[in-house]
Length: 150
Image (cartoon, rainbow, N blue to C red; front, side, top):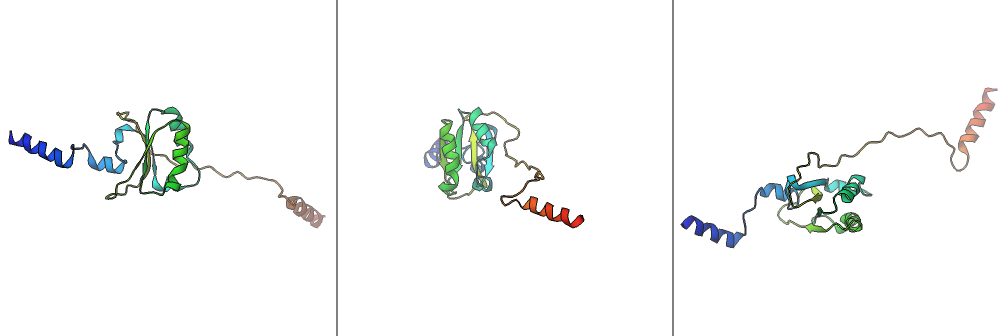
């Protein structure tokens, strides 16, 4: 009986015991099994918005967006604005004791067990383009080389 009383007192002082506290700190208050998509802080700071995140917003309108409050709002605002476009609610999570490397999490309030939640940057091979610049430099140089070979 005293163990129950001690647990009750501890709960009153510290709040409910959380499952997987380390995982919750890392993923901005949610669990890995609930996550649709994740971006690191460095990915959030990049210019533009990841297409994969917009696609996740479109497909998961009932999910909730968690953003790292240790980051500047100017870095997060592009994702909050886009979330608003799809009526996705968001929370800015600030943990003064722990700064997660995660910058953005889109998650449900129940388990979905998605295997690959991290966004990987796709590399695109640059195309070789044959065109002249605004001043016609390509044409000028090709004419010079034609004259020299005659």
